[in-house]
Amino acid sequence: MPEPILHTLDIESLDLEGRGIAHHDGKVVFVDGALPGERVVARITRRKPSYDKAQLESVLRASSQRVTPPCPHFGVCGGCAMQHLDPAAQMAVKQRALEDALAHLGKVTPGQILPAMQGPDWGYRHRARLSVRLVHKKGGVLVGFRERRGSYVADIHECRVLPPHVSALLVPLRGLVGGLSRPDRIPQIEVAVGDQATVLCLRHMEPLTDADLLRLRDFAGMHNIIWWLQPKGPETAHPLDPAQLDALAYALPAYGLRMHYRPADFTQVNPFINQTLIARALMLLDVQPQDRVADLFCGLGNFSLPLATQARQVLGIEGSATLVARAREDAIRQGLAERTEFTELNLFEVDADWLRSLGYFDLMLIDPPREGAFAVAQALAVLAPTERPRRVVYVSCNPATLARDAGCLVHDGGWTLRAVGAVNMFPHTAHVESIAVFEP
Image 1 (cartoon, rainbow, N blue to C red):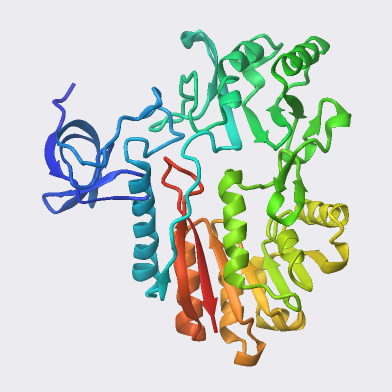
Image 2: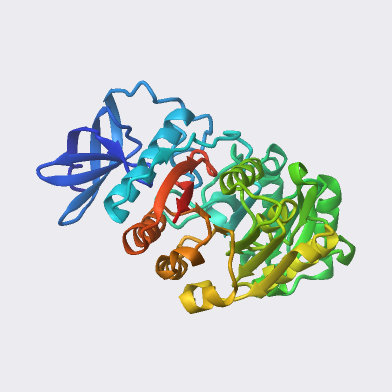
């Protein structure tokens, strides 16, 4: 075996995967486990022409922001990347990443930096996909997240970012799956925690036997959970007990709403931050009772229905027919059907003529997936001043695509980026959520 290549490095910054960035002999070196301001000894694990990857071996000079990770599995489990960094410092890193993306990719500077949005550091993750693998040499079934530097399922016994009652299920789930007729054909379990129910959706690639179903029911009764079964694609997911079809929901008490959803539906992972994010979005929009509002990429109405409690009319547009149906159902359930309209459309293929055809909107909220909303930004950029909403709030889960879209709005359309701020939707991960305000 060749001798390891060790370098002494001064760490300059963090990348969006939580790795320390250093330079050595003219090359960038990404160091897992290192923090800005530290001097470390790192072992090179992969060499590329323009950069190297390395693993922290020892810390010669520690950062004042370094903390002891509370999770015993940190560094092996791929669920978290920043537990070794103080949570307040994590937020500063994400804010800096957002500002750097806007400056370097979008060539735009916001007029104001909004206060960072933070919530609980632990137990916040109410949505998760747990990988399941039968590994005989490790004693049976593993249930958890994938390893940080590999495709194997990490051998974990707890998870601090999951709600405690879900973390406590990781070991019992091993025994449950191991006792099913085909444990080798169970690839994953989706977790969805509502305000009054916890659903586990079991992906099974072979039919379950009567004995399997009995084991699942016994487990559900013992641990107070609800089983859904998914034999094929997401559309095949269904509750083991049909009477529990509508058990999942989350409350938005500030608006008198309770949003219903299914395990396969997209909802925000962090319900605590979600409530704060909705409140800030509506505050930044400054919704008035006479306003007509567009909510693009509206999902199941997470922003649409709160908006409808304040505005005259809300049009929600979403590419998923399933989520559009869910939004319509909840609008009726909440008594907001007369103020809302929901329609299905691919928002990656729209233009200014389409936008004009919808009529004038006083305000617009955009909440796209990681791909961003470039077609929408292009459409907004070419609207005449009299056709433009007086304000657009853009909720982003990807600084790079937000920066691209902001550049389009500002440089091609003459819009102004009034304010932007980071949102710590996923503490201890490198994921950066943000919110931005544009005005014509």
